[in-house]
Image 1 (cartoon, one colour):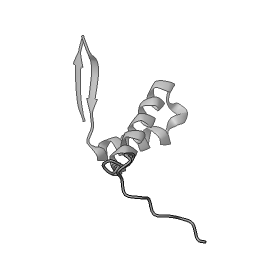
Image 2 (cartoon, helix red, strand yellow; image 1 turned 180 degrees about the vertical axis):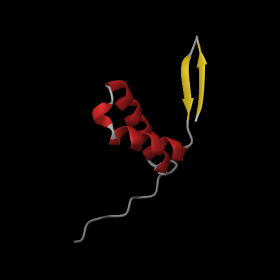
Image 3 (spheres, helix red, strand yellow; image 1 turned 90 degrees about the horizontal axis):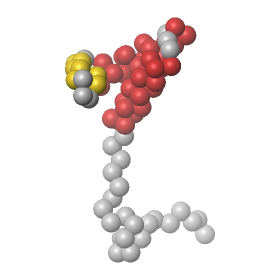
Image 4 (cartoon, helix red, strand yellow; image 1 turned 90 degrees about the vertical axis):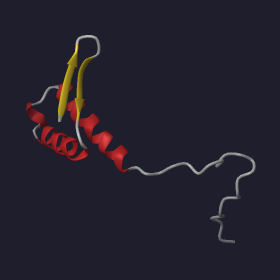
Length: 76
């Protein structure tokens, strides 16, 4: 983890994925002793972890009129 404080920008924390996942897990596990701001940090870290795992990319021109027709799911 890297912490940097700039009076103009405030506090900036940088985590690698494993550190963020571990910190979020520990904070949520001990949530009964945490205040709202700590829990918000934990949930933000967890959400960032989910975003790291999401590799979906919209196909190019998916909504253009020239796109290839979508496969049909009808069975008749």
